[in-house]
Image (cartoon, rainbow, N blue to C red; front, side, top):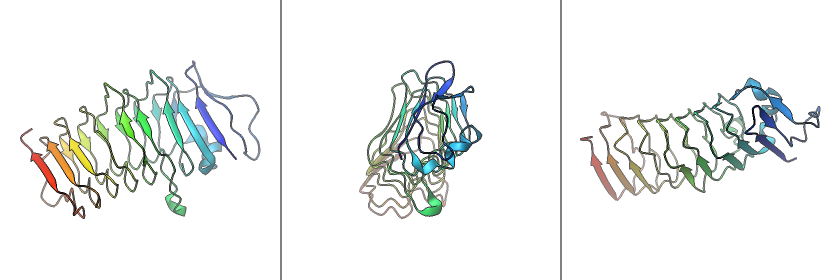
Amino acid sequence: IYIFIYINMSTDSIITGITGFTPPLPNNPLTVTDTIISQSSYASMTSFGSQIKEVQIGTVVTDISYQAFYPAANLDSLTFDNGSNLISIGSYAFQGQLSTGTRGVLNSISFPASLQSIGFESFNYQDLQGTVTFDNGSQLLSIAGSAFKDTYLSSITIPSSVTNIGNAAFQNTKLVSISIPPSVTTIEEYAFSNTDTLEHVIMYTSAAPTEGSRLFFASPNIKTAILDFSG
């Protein structure tokens, strides 16, 4: 079974090419008239979430809400049309299927510049061995707790617009180096913990960690660290 979802950049959101459901969906494209992809919008699909292979988000979509595509166990492509107006990705939106131990296979993502927030555990338990990038002019403000936890993420450039990095946001990843931009004012506990591949840390920020925050707990192989909390 191969499922492809295309959310068109026309007036409405249009989903095409969905096959393999019982009972089968209509042969004609299914039109969703709102611009917010919510859990209820895809109730008939998310029960088959582990079958979804590709998702393309068009310019009409502004919000991908709580558990919108969960469980995204076999999602291997997530793309955004040029000129995307996406503002937020909600909690658990593209999380792998933790309940069965089925890790997602999503490899790479290029987030649109319009995106402002990445929700709690939104990509938790995905693969992410490829590249995770942000388009030029990124407006991203917040990376919520556990957003990329338990992935194979090895490289990410945090945009200079980000102000908040949540609890365990990058816990148990494969990051080798991380640079925190001066825009960041809050870094929560365990943000980069349990990452034994992490070797280089650069932090030019006013977000001095609080006592006991354990930002790098169980990340024992850090070789170089430049920590400047003067802001």
